[in-house]
Image 1: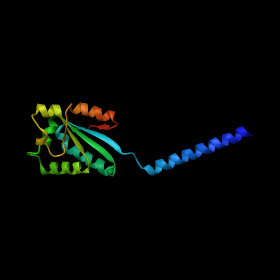
Image 2: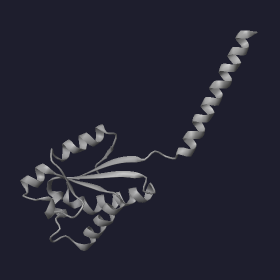
Image 3: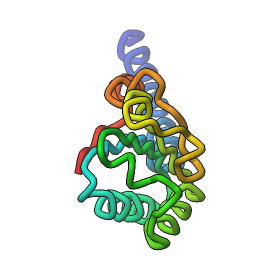
Image 4: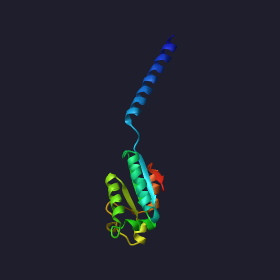
Length: 145
């Protein structure tokens, strides 16, 4: 008789614990996403910015997005000569929390400084691909549209 009573008590305790965990999970909401976008192609600048905009809208802003730019695409973000449409779209995304990273190797190779780029950029001093690998090791999902 004692074993059966003990077994029932353990089952009841386990059921209560699992019920509490399920209730906590239900009220916690979806986990915040972490996404790293990779951009190196000039012809994909508008497309990637559009993807990022859609990502913010689709998640209700429940996402941390880092945009890592290297190679020819970086010149598209120079503040001089940039189109008002790209500049405005980019500024809006930065306001939503976008963290743009410029490849330090590309910056040195193209003689571009942070002051040459649109406001909001940070330098990925070790390089864009190193930054992407670091982000992935931190749990960021890698996207290269």
